[in-house]
Length: 486
Image 1 (tube, one colour):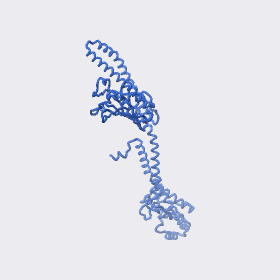
Image 2 (cartoon, helix red, strand yellow):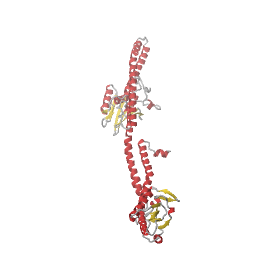
Image 3 (cartoon, one colour):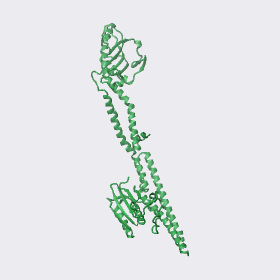
Image 4 (cartoon, rainbow, N blue to C red):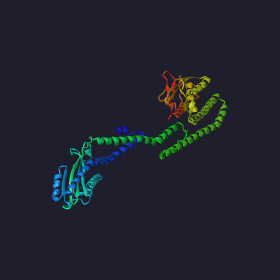
């Protein structure tokens, strides 16, 4: 199972390339017998021409004989181990010309044997000047030692020989009737030879290797073009998670991709409508709560007990702050502006000056190498929330800018108590989660939504936001933003 998972690609691109390449290779294996058969016929061509010429000369001598006895003498003189001649009775001949006779049965000729028969009859006809009946019984190749036959003889033989068995009719003469001649012969390549397995290597290199490489290259190009719309669809879906208000996906490509793009665009519009309805609902609730809250505030001011009046006032302030912060949270995580270049140095310096004017201690070290593509208002909100947390809990905020070729890292550090407790460094990113350590009357204004908004903005830029305790005390908020988001 592990080996199968390693060989089978995980991507659709890799799987399609493998399927096309393996399919073409399997098809080549199935059709390779055609090439072998063609090469087999080409290898038989020289022996067949030699045999047909020799046979035509034999028939010419037989037709010039004075009688049947003279013809018998000619057969005995010309015959040898490689060229066996004998007369056969016409009753043993197959009924149809152009058949192969094996085991006393007349079977149709194979296409390869049909080509050899046509070659033999053509040579005989040209040399004799007449068309004589010829029946091919068998033909095949042998290696030099006659240990292999057929296509296997081509693997390790320099000079494969053709084995022929046929019967033909000797034309009648004034002194002799028409007679059928049975011929079994073995002819070589007339001195021509090839290196063993040379044709196999040639076949593998020229047919298999070249075709496989060509198909693989073509598959790489074709599959890349075919899956490009799917890749764009996946990238759009990923960007949709960071910016719900991005332009809809262009509907083009194959029918399946167009259908998926239309579904994705419909889902995007549904999400936009859903978020808009939720925001409008919260805004309506906030507006409707103002009237009863104002009445409660007026009634609280009429309470005779000062302590009770103060508690009522604090509860009403908390209620208003919660509604207001919820609306700000919904507005903070929504990206409704266009992406453009942001001057990071100016953004950080402007925020630092604002905090300094309010009496806070904020410093900035380092500088950006250039503008960063992003959402200016949301990014400003993100950094502002981090600075607010730093000055609220650590009394002092220090911003360090580390700009690389691919990422921009902003580290906001404070000198506060840090965050202790298992899992709390992640839990504080959840809405309305606040840490009670080190809080006083000045810190109770926090709603527990600042870090949630900051992380949502980081994700909308394709970046990350993590917290870590400093070794000497305090907390680091590390905001990492990609310079070239995909």
